[in-house]
Image (cartoon, rainbow, N blue to C red; front, side, top):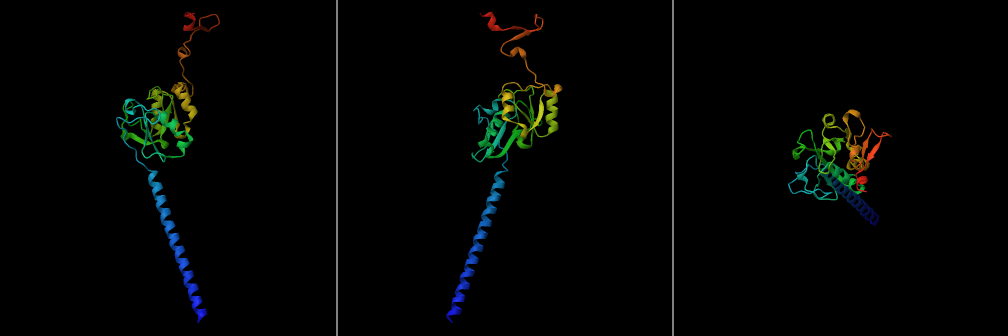
Length: 225
């Protein structure tokens, strides 16, 4: 009789452990599904309007005061969208390792669907699938900037009209931005990758090909000595 009772108690304990394990697994599966669903939701954040008083996250300038495409970044490190006065500033931020790892969503203006001087926020598109024109003749908030477009065809048409070359989101690097900021990326769409530079503005030196050696340099500093 005692043996039967012991077996019954053992069986009951085993059943209890199995039930407990099953409940734990069910709870874990439910929690995991919830996290997965939440993660998917946070990665699909819609763009927000850029208000009149909004400042650029990088330079602090009032965004709406300047022409050209703007940018927005949703980051796990910030509760609200980070806004930028130009695509140049936006990429300067995005290409920092700590920022890149926390990116959730990135938006830029589709300049094929809105005005260059006053971009409409209804034309904000996914930046990672967008196309960009670098080295064109139009000016943005920080001088030269990357013109952004929803389609490659729109970007190519812009490049034919304003110069520059078409690149993808992943082609933008810190080195490219440095060249852009230094004014060394102006390109003529008719000569491919050739760089168009104004020699008269370099260090204030003028060159005259009629001199004896074919290169006469006239520097403003020579007249002041």
